[in-house]
Image (cartoon, rainbow, N blue to C red):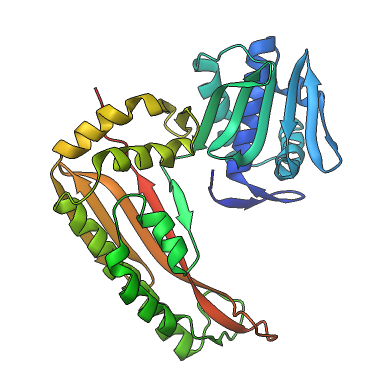
Length: 328
């Protein structure tokens, strides 16, 4: 779950990880008829992880939960921000309304278990997994410039093998190392800026190819349906997709793949591409509604084989947002 970062009293706080922590506290509190503050009192940091047991329910968090654990202590003491209060309020209200299954263990491991941000387990079996978002933000991020990574992102929807030769030719151009002047965003040499533009245009061209295949229905509807579902579930049998800000949720399951395939097969597709200074957007629409949205921007990491940390190579950053069509 990715949201904005906030500098708090002691640590840099990731809002996604914080709301996952609060969600886990609230789930335990609801089942044990406790308050989230009472649950918190039974949780501690041990060997770099956040763990505890409250009224027989086990909490297991990884190292990413250390900053949320500390921030919640400030919240409980009344020493926090209005933003943090909002996160706690929205998260707790959602859990209070949601019908949870019985569980004896809660995992809160920052999405390390595929798409599951918070997992509820009973006798070591996952009984409900939650993917938490503040709003409907990006389902996936792809950030390597190499062809294998490009195929992993786009190739699960349509066949892009016809674009490999073109992409590799452009790859050899935009990955030539260049100089950055400082750590400030985009403070690069003219050569590096030009290579970033080549990368953005390359991806935009590839995405046009992808979008045209939707328009022409040059896809396997069953494979497409399965891939869309996996954007939500991460390979789990099912997952509850939660938008905390609106309080909405829906359960996404592999059981709807065949019905989703029928919906996708019968749809009519269009697309739109938008160019801005530092971003490229491609919208693929089904029956007039957004099905997928790809946004690509450039970053630069240390060039391979270079001792100078300021010799950088352009890196692709593509964010994918998927909207699941209604399935009856």
